[in-house]
Image (cartoon, rainbow, N blue to C red; front, side, top):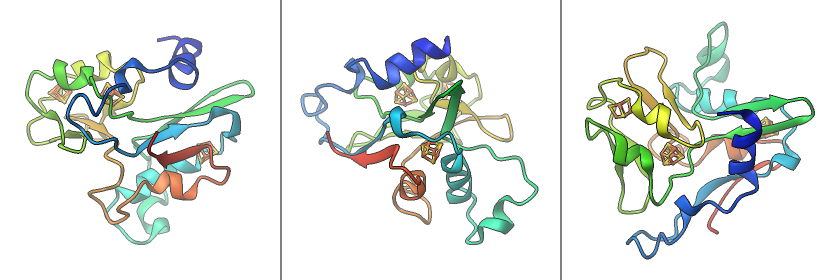
Length: 172
Ligand code: SF4
Ligand code: SF4
Ligand code: SF4
């Protein structure tokens, strides 16, 4: 998808995928929202994501000399930068498209991936309108943001460390 179109989807258009979560039986959950006007393009969020999901407590040991595979990524186009990650869509097309039942919706509305069930077909990678699900480092499965709820951080580490509040974690 061209970068300009994706930017419009992410930052400007109302997102029909996120509407009516209460009608669908989910609570109004907190999600990560992007404010591209404030993004510095520093890519710190990508490193904080990789660290948060490394299982280690020392950032230098976790990342030094390694290629990172974050679940958030920053798109850069001239003076415009914006972070892209999963929106946990109410009508999640990735969940509907998964042939292996590896993607599911929690009762709280979070979209989860079970890597043990994933067969690495990458249908979800193709259908996600945000480009928010991607191959994992080993290339055998998909990976996506799960809001740091299952790791040591317990809340989105990218949001906690963004120096300019360009990504926020809130209910809307
Ligand atoms: S940490 Fe914040 S300012 Fe830096 S690239 Fe990520 S979203 Fe943008
Ligand atoms: S991976 Fe994409 S389609 Fe699936 S819930 Fe996240 S943003 Fe929506
Ligand atoms: S790559 Fe994995 S999670 Fe994505 S559609 Fe295929 S089986 Fe499902």
